[in-house]
Length: 211
Image 1 (spheres, helix red, strand yellow):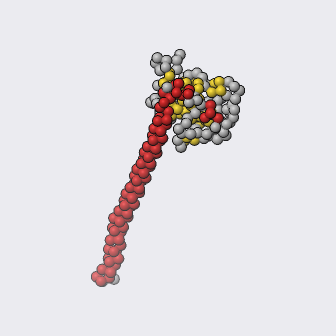
Image 2: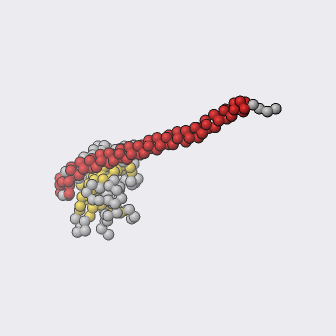
Image 3: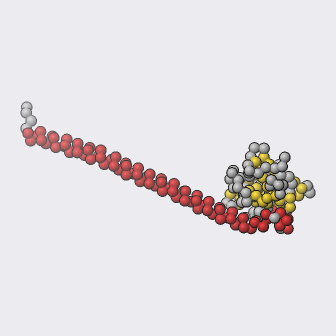
């Protein structure tokens, strides 16, 4: 039995429509996917850019605070001025023993130098950005003491006498215990001598103690 031309035409129409729809879908779906991918990529780049900008702002804020520290400690380049302000070499612990009087160094990381502590600031168990508990002096080539860093110090529970139970913070960063036997929470800022390890690092590889 032969199919009429009209019937053949009727069967071809749905097939043609179907093929057309598949063609449209083949073009439209990748286009939508690309558009969504571009949108996601743009959002990702925007997020990264915002993060970088925030980091830059944070760094700018830190540098501003450190500049304030430099201003208030500039007079302590003169060790006699530091002594007049209450700073003294080493610290007298709860047993009446003066500790930390020597040049402090690390066999691999460098050194710090000599620590001048302020007993009154050491007693209050708090931190004040513009009143660091210790001044760190690096020995110069001729043996003179050169102001290199400031150090915020708070006694911990294992100190003598004991102090706080949890780490205080300064400059928005938690302090840490570097020497468990001493038990001080500390934070350094090398505001007067460049430090290749970082301005907030404990040790400075460019500082060395007399042999």
